[in-house]
Image (cartoon, rainbow, N blue to C red; front, side, top):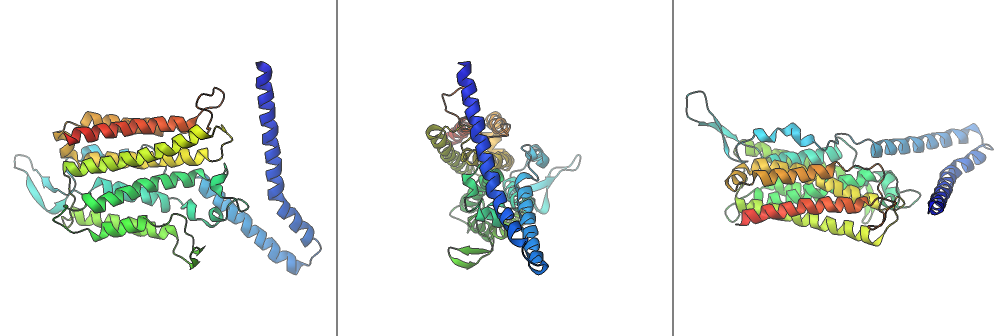
Length: 378
């Protein structure tokens, strides 16, 4: 048994060393070839070549920095909003109550939506506090033509951002269709509609593309426009110039759509976990893991905000304990932050299976959401 262990780790070490040598050779070869070529050329040729190499090195350095530094990342960032202090549902008039006097409405002042505020801040974290990795030039070029998602390097942040964006996209759709209007008796809010359209834009667009061929507006510009639209809607809502419908049936539909979205992600994790068991050498496991993590990160904040926006419904249906337990499930999932993602066999005992672990937490949160939906449906 001990010899089998030694053989396994010896072979794994040899394979890793061989892969590192090949990777170093592939990276160093262009520079070595350029050095040999430029050594026989004049300064007029060496100068531009040196500047070009310096530019490429600087570009890759910037790309490496952006993929490794996660600005604003904080699984507990919801605490900053002090949502527990909000006791008025979104869109309802705020009241001022001086000592000894009855509550009176404050002129033209309503409660803004925490859901909209959180969604805008999540998008802001993706494209303003950080670079949007998926549309950066070097991410589009790949590693010597290979898609970064097919490598174990420098793609975790991109997958996380796309997971967060999935949660924001779904929320924007629900804001337009149900939450930001009274169904059947009001029109669609144009700011929310603009935000939804911009958030649906392709996640991978740079300034120039081949399909279709020509110049383009990059992805972050669309998402920044969506942020402005969301914040404009919340400003109008705070001035009582917009609608936010906090009926129980709207909350049922919102929770149901989130549960369905998480169910689709659990299927993705299950497929990768069941059909591949490359352990630490599965180059796609990290993409699946961090996309799911980003989705949970986004939905945790949005559901915490929904608790504040639908405070009256939650209290009337006695949902506070169940909602708190649901948010606790999200918090437990967000504590799982392995340095290296492993997709070992589900019945294995050498390498961990982080995808199955994340899938477990997603199903736990989804089951709580289904239970909330059941209570609201009664």
